[in-house]
Image (cartoon, rainbow, N blue to C red):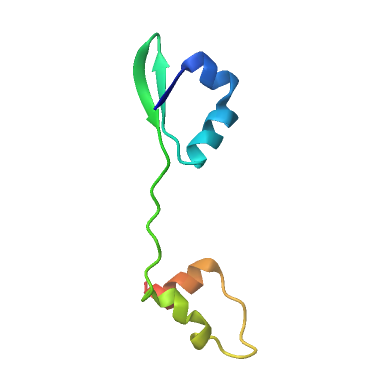
Length: 78
C-alpha cells in the first residue's frame, strides 16, 4: 500500500484519486502517523435475476418517459 503525506495529497489529490479508481489503496499520513486509508469502493454486481433486466418487457409502446425515481419504484416497488 502506498503511503502519502497530507501535503502530497493536497498537491496531487487528482493523481491519488486516479490511483484509487484503478484499484490501488493509499494510506494518508499526517505528521508521520497513519490517519486515513483511501481505497476503492466495492460495487455489488447486478444479479441475473434483477428485475431491471425485465424493464423492456414492461414498457408500453408510445408510453411517456419516466424519471429514474419512477422507474425504480415501478421495478423495485415503493
